[in-house]
Structures are given as C-alpha cells and as structure tokens.
Length: 189
Image (cartoon, rainbow, N blue to C red; front, side, top):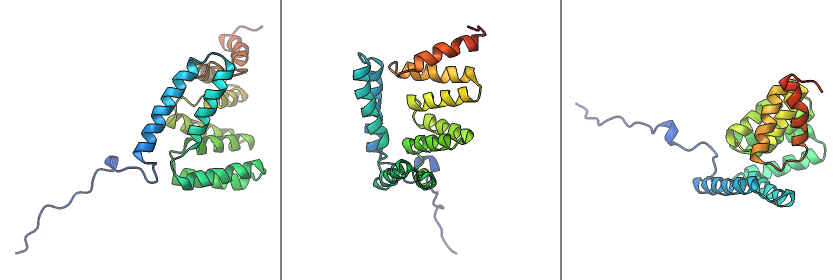
C-alpha cells in the first residue's frame, strides 16, 4: 500500500504578484509621493507653482519600476520624436504586454492612436490610464477633447470638469468648459 499525504495546493492567483510588476516598495513609495503631489497641486498658489508640481508628477509617472520598461519607453519616445510612429507603437505595445501597469505606456500609446485618428483605440487606452491612475488629469483632458470631436459634448464636459477638479490650474480648460456648458444645458449663445 502506498501512503500519500495531502495534495499540495497552489497558492491563489490573487496572492501572487502580477508578472513583471514593480517591487511593492517602489509601488507604495510611488503612490505615497503621488498622493502628496496631487494634494499640493490642488492647493497650488498659482500657475507657476502648479507647473513645478505637474513636472514632478510627470517624472514620477514616467518611472515604471523596471529598467527594461524604462528603456523601451525611452526608445518609443525617441521614435515618436523622429516621426517613426509604427516603431513607437510597436515599442509601446511591448511595454504594455510586458508591464501592463505602466501608466505612461498606455498614455503615450493613446496619444499615438489619437494622432493616427484611431479615436476608439485612443479612448480605450485612456480608459486604461484612468483605471491605473484615476487622477491622471492629462488623460481626462485628452478624453474630453476626443469626446468633443465625436460630438459627445456632455461626456466631454464631465471629463474636463473632473480634470479641473484634480488640477485647477490647467490652461484653456475653463474656457472650453465655458463654451461647452451652454451646449450641454441646451442654451444657445
């Protein structure tokens, strides 16, 4: 007779870290720093202070926690600057496939899709940006502009107002909201 013990059970998938995820210490420090900066941004004393905080947020968002992802992102940025859209798209696809939590990869790919007039794909990528970082006011502004192009003024207005709540110092957005509000409310000027 053969004696066997209990069958080993694999740990639950939820307990295992996502493939290629940044180390927990990186993610928690990043989240803490972003929380602090977004709070400061909301309370900034004018455009100059807001721009400095926005730059810090941008630098943190650009850091993935992976040297490989950062290298691919840098190469994609270079390809975009050299107007090599297909190469940039391929590189960003690779980052997203390997490191799906990289917010800026989704954001830059949305920008590329938008530039290529692939609005549906751009909106899908922005939705992923906002899933990963709901305070990404730049993505909200982009989403608002795309909705406006599609004639969906109400959805555009919602996205732009939300962006302005997070960053009250975004240039030109108050004027766009002011123009859209009467259209959405049904009042023609």
